[in-house]
Each structure stands twice: as structure tokens, then as C-alpha cells.
Image (tube, rainbow, N blue to C red; front, side, top):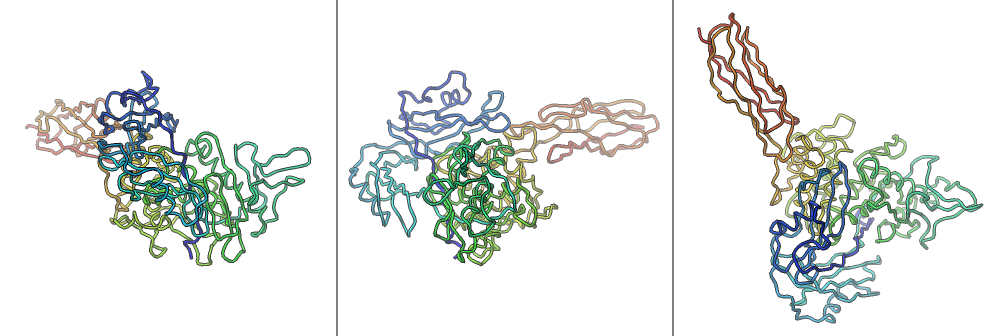
Length: 606
């Protein structure tokens, strides 16, 4: 029963591509670093001679980062899964790329199947069909490519509306892939105390539950019209009141909107300052996102509406997933990560609101307030296996699980990233899958890294792609520091998500001393060179200290602090009173997140 509460999610519209005659971005700028990269290094994008690229737009992110998104055509046909993102810094340099495709395309583009046959196959995938779109011929970026028709079938399945994208192989008629814009999910709790402030609109003697500031945000009944009244006081505090449910919905939307802006640097749910309406009073033990509005039902005992802060924030979190780069269709594994995104943004909204224990305090438990079917919470982010069947760790079985179940892996990763294994702020401990110990970065910084991850999202988006993108996000958002990168990587390792191909970065450095064996007379000086190197793209600052000096000897560094890749001169000054002998001096290089040492063997002659 706990899986019956569906928090549905929707994708953004499929882009229409405009091909150019050469493999460079359409309308490319001669000076934009992302366009220059695409023009100069097509091999990085697994290009073929028949590829062209279309620049879709630029998303401004935190720290001055720019995320430029591109789509691809092959021989004039749209490529589903050929999209990519180029990330550039505030000073114009390209920092990283996120490429969905993994090999060049090479295929014939003449179909054997006709559009009518594609429609027939697509219609058979949905029990109740109300409309079918004209088939669109495209190339799927699978191996060397797969020619297919995309058909969108609208209707219903199991009593719930459906908008099913069916990809039909244009050569064999097999279903290559299908993805429903309305997907099942789960949610959680509700009331926020009395009174609360929400955005409403007044006109003369009539008021309505329409937010005057957050464009597109309104709440009402199942007919889609916003509730109205003769005054600006709403609801009676009852768990069964629809008007009260809208108070909770608008309060949660306002809070998540502010969290996205103030913590994650995103304006509106779609990044463009837009919000979306909500409807309450759904006659179902369910809540879901339809693609144009969110709809909220009731608990199985009819005692409460499913409009708590984390339920609402979860639903609207799907909008963020749908409106970040990458066509929001794809396989079940992407749906799992979408479901987890709703949980993550809901947890961040609770952290931002920081309500007292009497209402909905910040936690990482999904559904504890609504108790939707009387069996307790729906998910535990700090230890998913507390819900029988939910995985703490990634295995080959996870990508085929129901999204509500498989979401546990990324939820667990995010908890470790934010809070660590043994939090000191009252949050529960979180055991890892590799017995490691992790110190969390805090919810806000973890959220910033996850938003940077979503802004690198592409059409193909398994757990391993999210891992790689989050590591790149940490490096780009926090240059000069290894702490964030190392914690992101450690948290993925802790839930056993394997490394992704093309995961090029490590955030480490080494230190050395030359020469490492010197002699000196009492009363004299001797110098050695301390050098450091880094295999991280982002340099970090290192402080230098000498330890193990004998009595009467001092050491000085010039400079005392260096950036990785630079050198420092270490000078030993030996007093006349220093006893002759051979000493091992340790040079400590104190980095941002880790320390390293090198040794000098110094002999004081008689």
C-alpha cells in the first residue's frame, strides 16, 4: 500500500532542431568559449561527419558559472540522447563538459516501417487512448545509432492519466523505449501552524489564492480555478478542508521558491522565474505532477489532505528536474533519479524553513507527517533499508526497481554529503556500504553541488553520470578546495555507485624536497627546494611547516604558503650549539582537505 501514493513528474517539451550545413553550433558566437570549444574539438563530442549542433541556450548558475546546452542532428534528423552541456567559468574559460552520447553515429536513415505502423505499435502500449501525435522520425543515440519514430500517446492507465512517449524502431517495429511524462511517486506531510503568510491577490472586495509575486502560482479545486473569497483569511486549520490544503500548498511553494533562490541561485522552478498551479481535492490516495499542474489527494482514512511541506516540495522538485538540461524522458534509471530529486529538494526545503518540532522540523524522512496509509513514513534518506526492500547501496538490480524504491541510493548519497556518517546536529547516524566515515558539508552546500549536478544533466542519465557530474560541479563551484570534491566522491563510494568512464579528475597534490639529503656545519645555513604538484584542475593553497628540528636549529620557508604547482625555498639555520648528528626533518604540506609530508635527511657535521 505504501507505493500507491503517486507523486508524478513530467518532462519539458522535446526541442525542435534546426540543422546547419557544417558541424558547428547554429548561431555560434565567434567569442563564446563554449561555442569555440564545440567548433574546435568535435571529437570530444563523439562527432560524425553528418552531425550538426544547435545551441539551445545558456543557464546562469552560482559563482558566475554558465551552462550552455546543445542538441544534435544526424543527417538532418534529431538525435535523441545526443545532447550535451558545456560549463564555462566567470572569466570565460571552459571548465567541463557533460556529454550524453558515448560513441559516434553511423547508420542509414531510410525507415522500413511506415508512420501508420508506428502509430499502431504505440497505441498498443496504453490501455485507454485519447490522442496520438504524428510520428517523428529521429535517431536514438544507442551505440552507432538506432532509427526510430517517436509517438506521443495520451490517455489513461490504471485509472490515472498518461502521456506516453513511445519510441518505435523504424526498421523492426520493436518498442525501443517508452517513457511516461506522468510517473508514479510518493510524498509526505502537511500542517505548518497558524497563522502562516501566503501570497494572495485582492481586487476590490474579492480575494483569490493567486500569488501576486511568484508568476504562475495559484491554488484551487479540481476544476483548475483558484479559490476566491470576500476576505484575505483562508482555511480553518482542519486536515480535511480543501481551502486549508491550499494554504499549506502555497506556504510550501513559497518556501521552496525562496530556498531555490537564496540557497541554490535558481529563480523560479524552471530557472526563468516561473511557477505552476496546484489543485487540491483529488479523490484519490495520491498526489502527482501532470506536466502543467500538481494535484493533491487525501490519506487512505480521509483524515488529511496530502499537502504537507515535503509532499508539495517533492512534487515541485520534479519541475526542477524537468526544466534543467536534458530531455526529461529516458529509461527507468533516470526516473529513479528524478524521484530522488523530489526527495532531495523537499529535504532542502525543510532545512531552509527550519520549523519547530510541533510542525514539520527539518529531517530526512519522507512521509512521516501524513502517514499516508497508516504504516508510517515512506522513505528514510539516512538509512533507506529501514523501509523493507529499499536499497542502501547500488547494485545491478537498482536500475530496474520502481522509482520510489530505487531512489534510496541517491537519497543515501545526498544525506552522507550533507550530514555525514555521524552528525553532531541531532540528525541520525548513517552507516555506509564500505564502512567508511564521512564528515558532511551541510545541507546548503550539498544542495548547491546537487543543483550544479542537475545543470549538467543530459538525456541519458544513469547513477554513474550523476556521480561524474557532481564531482565536476564540486570542482567548478569551489575552486582551490579539495574538501567538497573529496566528500562528493567519498559519498558515492560509500553507496557503491561505480566510477563513470571519463571521470578525469582527482583533487590531490604531492610534495617533494630536493635535494633530500644535505650536510651543514654548526653556525651555518643550508637551503633546499620544496615543490608541489597537483593532478586536480583546481589549484589549492598549501601551508608549509617543518617538524623534528633539533635544539638550536630553525627553519624558514620563502614563501611560507604556496599554491599547488609552485615552489618554496626552505632554509635551515644551524646554531653553533646544535649537536652534531644526522636528523630526519619532516616537511608538512597542510592542504585544504588533506595533508602530505616529505622528509629531509640533514647531517650536522662535527
